[in-house]
Image: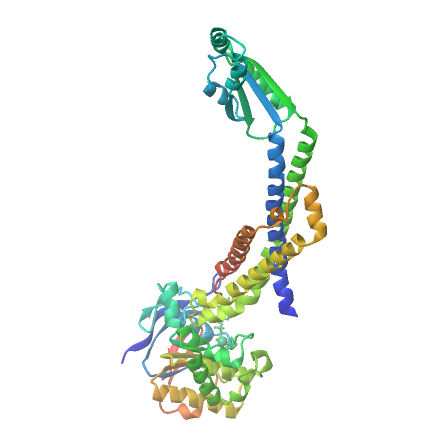
Length: 223
Length: 270
Ligand SMILES: Nc1ncnc2c1ncn2[C@@H]1O[C@H](COP(=O)(O)OP(=O)(O)OP(=O)(O)O)[C@@H](O)[C@H]1O
Ligand SMILES: [Mg+2]
């Protein structure tokens, strides 16, 4: 199995700040489902940022999809991002676009025809139980609804890797279950590699999950 | 409502700039014809010996556009009729040459005096006759108006540009979030800035439309036509269809430049 993510002695620091991640060495193989936990402010979101090229490396090495993230250039980075599905902690929906168009974003970028984008967006909105809100705009939705729209958008283009930052942070038990089921299905049916930052690892995953934990800037492998 | 205001804050400065440009072009056209008629109202006749060279004269002063030899044969032929051929031939040999001098632009009295002394110092030149109609005052007025309108227009243009830049900063702020998100999903530059360019082009088109309709309205207004007539200009001087090309070029250039500026200033934040 190929490694989708490969970090060795990875160091991450914001300019003029102490490093957030002092040392991270781990690998994630194709089709794995990985949980990342850690206290608030421990650097979970920062670690994800480095994986989609939004955070320059301060040391060590990081490869995503076989691409070296240290020397990645503009257009190569954009190409990589088109094959990753991200669920941001703050959702990052485009507020002047309808819910449907938001879900269509990765497909529009991939260059699919409008009707294909629309059909796929509708399918995913049905999966996250939001098809009745497709004409609404993000500010008209509740936090949990926005989070599910972000979920639909991350799945829309069948990415090889999904990076999810607390995807159930704002959801009730039922909606959380919907999200976990979707992630599990993508993982099982499409062999999508999944990295989820969360505070609570749901029980349904007890069998085959991997677990990384960040503490004091060091990434430990629990499972 | 909000979007109309946003469009206007780009369209209005553009409109002002385009109007200024059109105004300058019109003013240039009107004054050009006046200047021409003023320039031609000088007639300078130079009397010179046969030894004087035409090229000597025409390169003497930068004010001179061209020198034309005045054909004296006509005069001679008339005299010849009453004379025996020998004396006619003699007269021909001693008769001086006459040149008419055309100027490049209108010049004031002092400058003309300088020209005269330049010309008279050329070897072989016997005399310089200057027949002038004094237009100094009118010309000074024309020049003053031209300069003040140019300064005025440049000022309006500068203020409008400042307003444009301010509007662009607002745009940049408004579009940053969307461009940010699109960039995180790997959208190429043209895709994430497409909306911005579309907006800019639409606004440029609207500003152009407004200016052209305002001009067409003016050209067809009887009062304006009468006024133009008074200064000796026709409505064609006020507005030509060629002008649309110039205005369209400027309008789109400014709009696209502004949008490009926003796009270039975009930086992905961490
Ligand atoms: N843009 C930034 N500039 C400087 N420091 C930052 C920036 N973003 C985050 N930090 C700091 O980096 C540390 C890690 O932040 P990060 O967002 O990765 O934490 P987290 O583990 O995701 O926390 P949470 O569970 O609350 O989301 C924090 O101390 C935070 O203050
Ligand atoms: Mg976080």
